[in-house]
Image (cartoon, rainbow, N blue to C red; front, side):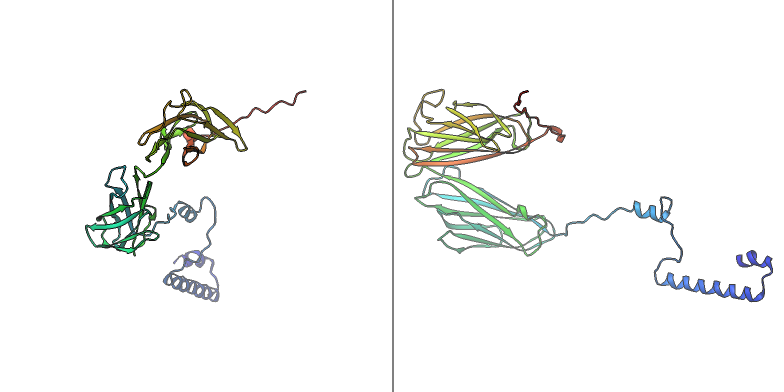
Length: 355
């Protein structure tokens, strides 16, 4: 043994040798008991860069929290009937529910909250059962009980409604899906579909504003942003007076041009807000279109801005027709980003106080 090679040459007293052997025996038994109990060995670890245990712990990858498995439902809804929809006519909607897994979606239910101005007619489904569960007022509600939906499977339904004779303008039909199984991505469980009801009985105008170029998700500093403001006569009356006001975020956008030309540009407030005004778009060019707005016809106003600062820019339009008898408004939101996502520095020239 190592003990004899180390200490036997020194001719220690037998008593001391016995005590040493007893101590070694006790230490060995203690180590065995610790190993059996799953505990660490009885030695001291020195911390530092050269400690192999510390290095192993530092190089051990940290566990990344994972999303618990569930059933990811996705809902889509589209109108099968083309716009415009005449008052009193039928609108058919297709509703598609799918499960991308990984688990089975148990007890899937789709609820269709029909908008005001329409009445439930029928519901045809590929699987399950569909029925009317609530009647207007205030609105009809249809319930589609799909039952269980395996991963990778889908189902479809066609819901038919009838438009009221007095309905007019845009109507939006929303539906949402639910399941007894947890859904890790519930944001795609709802879907909506829009339809335009026209021509309307009486005077009616629809205003819509949209960003034409560049795309909403790819607008950068220095880009020229083109908006279209469409004013459509969806009623049965002709308008000889159509006023328009377009307000914009003057902190992030600089007005460049518009067609027709606005009669007034003003910038006020802090943060700065800009306003463009057209007193009457039926007037002569360059400030108007030179004609009245007849039923079924449309005015399209183009407005251009330069993107001056990053962030979300709000641009809203409001119109009045028939001396204010008919009004409508619409807004567009633009995300302005920095090319490459780098640093951005703004500099203002302050007025000099003089010497």
